[in-house]
Length: 324
Image (cartoon, rainbow, N blue to C red):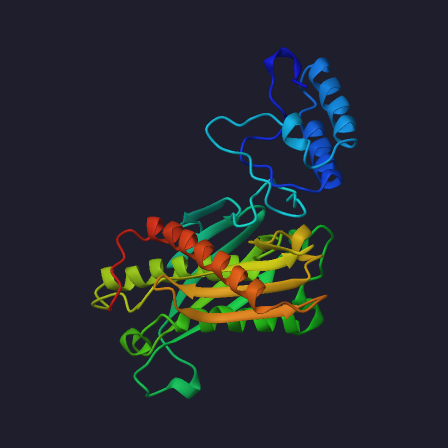
């Protein structure tokens, strides 16, 4: 069976990983719908081929599938997993970091991770909290918030409730801890860097995007102190970034979007440095427990994802020299 007009099947070579025919045909049908602009004969072929596949066994499947050029088609998983945005299980969403997004702040970025967008600013205050006075050390603190329509339906501002929610309190403390872990506070001097992370659009992974963006904003602010002669060097020991991983329908996935996160069996957040050191690991079995092998795979995915994020940070902070 070959498609008309010299067209190929609607899956790219090397992309298909299947043994379960039912799941394959469902995914194939979805891809065919995405190709609705194709010719009528091509759409008719896809529809007929999908029906034909339902009557064959996995042994016969290679006879129907096209032979990929230069790369053998892999039939690895016992169940094919199809991500809504066509990503591979270990693939990050597209990441874009725009520096100096807020011109009035000492350091600022807009970080975009897929459809999640967060504005991160770093502000310098020439004082420290009471518990840090006369210590000779500085401090980094963080605040986190979401604008009302960052989500699909409007969420009331927390200021109207009189206090931040438990989730907000947890996230802003996580951001502060992550940045302090890679900062030499004794070299910062008795001053506070305030990190503000405001989510303007949420599609999963807002806390991890906030940490990744906040580090860049912090680096830009510290560079300003060096340029002004206030500091002799940037008091950062290493780069730090964060990413999520999880178990969705039995499949380990990296960088979960909201659709995946909302139905995840296991949800994890990894905060790591460029030197492959752990800053924080958050793990929750939402619906079912996970084993050591699954944990190891999630950590491996996260390690690779964090290094890719740090490469994005380094591209923005190309002139930043870390204090060793």
